Length: 240
Picture 1 (cartoon, rainbow, N blue to C red):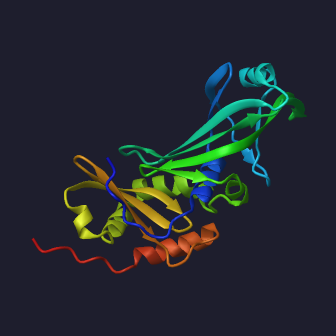
Picture 2: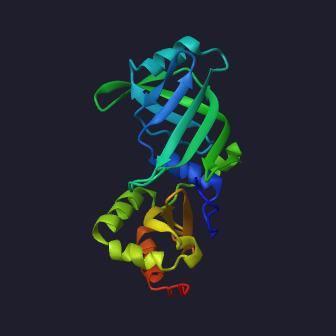
Picture 3: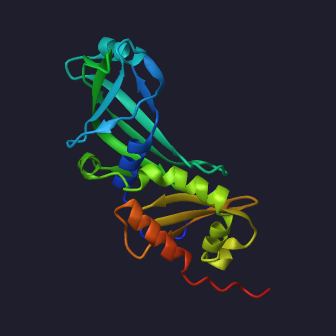
């Protein structure tokens, strides 16, 4: 169970969805005659269509050929965003997109035949923090992935493994009432707006965002903003 999080400036649902799609290593696909994960990263083009590349004889490609009509094969794509740091309830968010596959076609790349399938979204949602957010397809097409998405996993795992003292410094900035009964505080997420900590308690947890003074646009800006965040004044704890 996740208690109500402390709010701060955070990515919009469309940006979160694009970030998850850009970072995922696999996609769960459901269509007529096929329901399984494929290990590929969907590429979102400037009109919001997703392009998936797979081996030419992949079962999904065959299923799309068989199920397809003039309007395409209806399908659902789902990607889970899993926290890189081990913790309770590691799935941070899920993106679900329904739409249609066009007929696949063969391409020859890197010395091998591959199948390229285009997926046209019709509906998209983001499930996060116990809520479902509808995402207009135009917003999904226009959004850009978070600029530090590629380094987030390494940053968070390095923070936990090599700098637990920094995690303690960040925890000292959390409202003391949220730390009552806390058994562990760990970094859950990092993005251009700041860092999210998970405060784990015996029966539930709460996610707390510590925001930067302004959104960052690069890894260098992120490093500088994180350094400033570490030197923010700590919150006063209650006297017991």
